[in-house]
Each structure stands twice: as structure tokens, then as C-alpha cells.
Length: 305
Image (cartoon, rainbow, N blue to C red; front, top):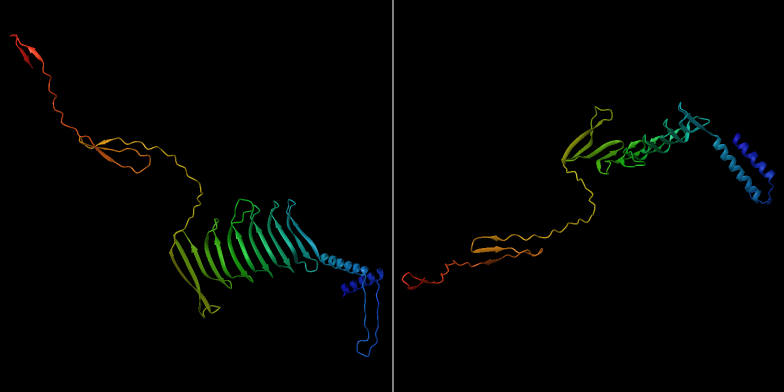
């Protein structure tokens, strides 16, 4: 009521301060509608409405006040807003480490988490990204591997939540991007799990079985099995031209098979080698006849030797 009276007084003051041209025509009729008003608002009246909107914005902002907590060293520990009337957190809140790095960023509405939430590693990199609705996880939730590299975002986990319960597929990743586990959830209950190791794939399923001895009259029966699996380690090979030095072919030595047959291999500079046997017909050399010489004997005769 107080707010309404304040607004009424502001409008009245605006009309009084900024007179406007208006025409009121009263038409008496035999119908049930006795009057008809036609009001023409000029520029000054528009300015009055703008002032009214500014006032409403200031009233809304004054409903919240800044809230801050500090460490003993003087650095901010928590920063956010609270509602003056209820004292509940509102808007954007940030939690810091004593060295000034962020730990968490979150949003509140009427004292409940609403919207995205970010958590951070000690080095300032993002650790998790979640989404809330009415203080419950709702939507995708991402978790990252720790890395010394600045602004690194190597995905470790990806899942989906619905009204605070995990639902649908969830994946776990290695730092190189390979999937090491796949899980499926239904209304917060895990129903399948597939895990990849170096030499095997492990499967696990959960089936609901009726059992009146339990509070919900059912239990989940687990079935497990595995099968061989070879981890495919893909190596990245750069496309580089490999040049090899061409070594000149050395001529092979002549190999003598025997005294009568010789096989000679001649180099042909990379062409197909052809071997052509060459035969050296060696004859048995007979002794060359000695040249006849004339010799004078003691008796004076001449002989041919």
C-alpha cells in the first residue's frame, strides 16, 4: 500500500509539474457507458513516466545490499548480494582464495542456486561447469583434467542432470580425448557401464528385480562380462620427404668357376643385371720345337742338332 501511494503521488506531481494538453469529451448517451475520455499525452508527460521507471529501478536496487567477507590478510573471501528483508543471497556470488584467485562463481535467486556455477583449480583453470535450477543440478555438467597450461580445457567428464538426478549418457575421457568409460543413467540410477582397458572391454548392467523384502520392493541385479580389446594407439606421423643418398654400385669381382669356364658380372647402373658367360678355350700348350742348330763335331763333320 505504501508503494502504491508513493507511485500515485509521483504521478500526480508529474502531471502538476508538467501540464499537458488534454481534452475530455463527455458524451451523454442512453447506453450504460456515460462517459468517454480522450487524453492526449505530450512530451512532458512522457518524461514523467521515464522518471517513474527510474524510481522503480532505484527502489528495486535498494532492496539488495552488498555483502563481503574478508580474510585476516585483508583480501576478499566472499562477495555477493543479500536481500534486505529476508537476508537470503541474491544475484552473483564469488568465493576467493586467500591469494586472490577464484574458487567458485555461482548465482542465487530467492536464496536458491539458479543458473551456471563455475569452480576453479588452484592455478585458476576451470575445474567444473554446472547448471542449477531451484537449487538442484539441471542440465549439462562438465569436469576438466588438471593441467599446468593456462586456460587448458581437457574434458574429463560430461553428464546430464534432470531435477538433481543424473539422467541419460555420461562419458569419462582420457587427457588425450579417448573415451575410457560410457555410462547410462535413468532417473538417477546407473543402468549400464562400459569401460575400455588396454586388452579388454568390461561391461556391466543393472536390472531392476522385484523383491518385497526391500523398502522400494525391488533391487538392482548386476550382470558383468568382458571381451578382448586391443587399445588402438594412434601415432601421429608427420609427412616428411625422406631422401636417401644414392650410392654408386660397385662392380663385382669376376668369379672364376673353373679353369675352363668363367662367369663375369658387369655393373649396369641400376638396370637388370644380365650375366653372359664367356668361355676361354685354353689349349694344352705343347712344347715348342727347339730350333735346329749346326754343330761341328770333333772329327770335323757338321751335325744338325
